[in-house]
Length: 235
Image (cartoon, rainbow, N blue to C red; front, side, top):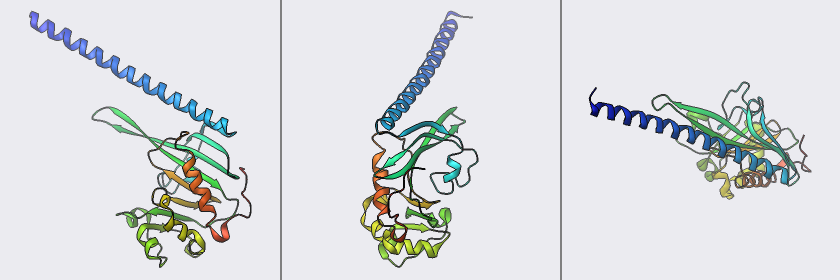
């Protein structure tokens, strides 16, 4: 082996060692940052008298069927679960996490979506309201037509109980959707006695927590006959 070859081997080994050290430090830093974010969320929740749980098994299963959650879920845990009362309404918020692996780069990306669910305490029809998109009919099914031009243009609305859903929309929700700019940013879903919204690729934090809850509580006042006479407490 020549001297030049020996130098190249030493340089290569040094570079490989440096890369391994950098990767390990990066992983450790990300883990530390994640743990610190969890601690801040717990502190934020407890400061408001709410309950924080690091994870609840099969929680996502109860909310499956509409993005950003999977259509079908089995045993999928909800992370960073916060439960409590907001403006008189019981609620639960949680993160749904999944992992995208890149075989070529041997890296894994963590995708985080956040969900907020407000307990209405009344029976509700199935109803999903999304901002209109190019492939909505293919991805979400045929949209309801309400005969309200702005609503039909801006939103893709789907229900398995169109008669009851139509009554809710025409009873006040349609006016809310077409007049509140938040409706174009956050979807709405009526499901299992709850009013639900979500934010894709967003983690729960003190900075992201309140606006979706405010949106849900404001929307409750426009549910017409579904509006509860008094806010139900957390179960």
